[in-house]
Each structure stands twice: as C-alpha cells, then as structure tokens.
Length: 378
Image (cartoon, rainbow, N blue to C red; front, side, top):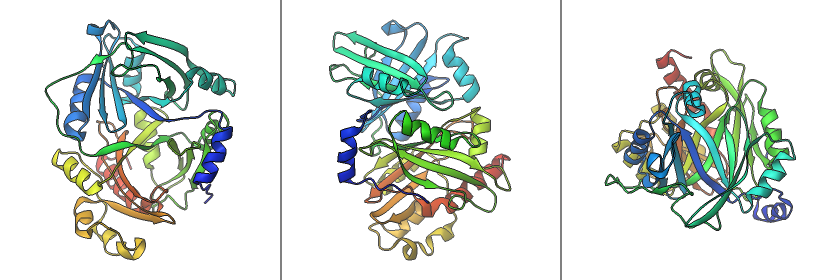
C-alpha cells in the first residue's frame, strides 16, 4: 500500500504551487426522474432543508430543479420537463444519479483554462450568470463516464443559490439530522481504468494520491476491487477511484457498472459530529443501512483500542470503527437509495483519523455481498 501523508506543512507548500486551488464542494447535482419527490425524500429521510427552486415559474422551459441543504452540503435535484432531452437520456441510461460535482473556486475562468490546456474535455466554457443579487461565473469539464465537474466562482453573488433560482419555502421542514459537509465522493470506473483517471486527476487537476488499496486489501472469498484516493492540496476534496478486480463472483463495482450503465459516482460520504445520534435519527425515518455480522463487535476493542462511544449503541446501530495512526473513525453505509443497486450514502465521523476504514473492508464487503445475493446479482 502506498501512502502520501498530507500534513499542515506540506499542504502550505503545495498551496503555493497549486495551479487549481479548490475551496471545497459547492454542490452536487443529481438528475432524477421526479425532482419534487426526490427533494421530499431528502427532506423527510435525511433532514435536508429546502433552499431554492427553478423551473417554469422562473423562466426555465426545459427542466426543473430543487435545491436542499444541510450544513455545507447542497444537493440539486433536476428533472426534465419534456421528452427527448439530454437530462432524460441520462436518467434512462443511469437511473437517478450524480451528473455534476461542482467545485468552489476563486476564479472559474482560470480553472477552466488550466484544466483544458492540460487535456480536459470541455463541458461548459466560462459563463457569467447574473441577476439583481450579483453574478457568478461557472465553467466545466468532463470526467469519467457522464460525470462532469463544474467550477463555481461566487464571491460576487449574494442570492439564495445561483441566478435563475428563487427561494423555496414549503411548510414541510423536518429537523436536520446533524450532517455537516461532504467528506469524499467515490467513483467507480471500468476494468483497468483506475490508473487512467488517477493520472487525469493528478495531471489535469493537480490532485495527489493520498492512499491506495489493492485486491489484497479489498477482497473477500468471492469479490475484489482496487482503489486509489486522490486529494487536493488542502484536503477538502477527496475522490477515491475504484475499479473491479478478478474474483470468484461479480464484485460490487461490476454490479454498479452493469446497472448504472458505465462509470459514475458510487457513493457520497457525509460527515457528522455525532454518528450515534445521526444514525439513530435516520433509522427512525426508515433510512436503511447495511448490517455487518454481529460477530464483528466481539473483538472490536481489541482491534481499535479504547473509544468514546458505548459498544452497545454501535452494535445495535451497525456502526463500524477503524483506527489509523492519527485517531479513529466511525462509519456506516446506507443501502442504495433508488431501485437500481447504484448510488448510496456513507455517514462518517472522524476522531482524528485521516483514512477510509481499511479495517472494515472485509466486513463491509461481506454485507454488500449478502445484499447482492438477495438481489440475485452476486
């Protein structure tokens, strides 16, 4: 396993030469069959708050979008208003899924120029969008599959979200569940494509390899995969990239590729400061999680050492724990949130740990394989 330690000192040194400074995740846009119903789901199940809306009432004729927010996480849920659209074709091929991972930058024009001159395929040239609340500049590039990155420059905009949107204020406002920000987003790519996209993120976007896992690290008796984690200089953007590896049966990455119809975002990891409280609330709202075998907890403290949380609560909720040299983390994974076994969410709480739960891979993958077996896709 190869690692690159990202410390405060080398973050500072890297920032001085970083040609693509990224301030964080601006928003994640999903193309979905029914934006209003999806917004209702994320409000009711995950505690997102209504923020903005755009559609016929705001002058759009081709699509409708609802924006929901929790902490620093913004989800944009977009549906077409007519047949035969690019949005509709995306949904037909992939089902509900992530189309845009938008990145907050200081200069969207420079971000576009730096990435396209390094070989990125253009998606959206620098475009100024304005209304009475100011203006934003957005630009974009293609990445794996049909996923795109949009660079968002918004320092001179003071509106609710973006020009073209109005504030959305429905009466339905379930309480938040404690989600704070996006920790990382995992992409699944095809056979032997991982290094291609690792090189893309390194050479085109200036990300560095934080950690890598091979099929000895991530495997069970039946399935395996390979993964490398790319991170930007300040550590706010982390993109693990997975590819399948040879196993006795179909891996979760192969299943994803089959049902998604190609590469795409597999899961979105969101951080909380109190995972026990957050997961307890999510379960009360019928969010379903993968469940590892109860035996996982029998020797947990021997493996990870002393932790602050009560073992009974972790066992009851199915929360996993792993430790690295800097601390420990707690994590749990939802089942897929749609009919296709594709997109899901990870809830994570970091207590110093900078890693991704390597010690949990075997238990997690066996839980996933159990679900695959129930679906008849293993």
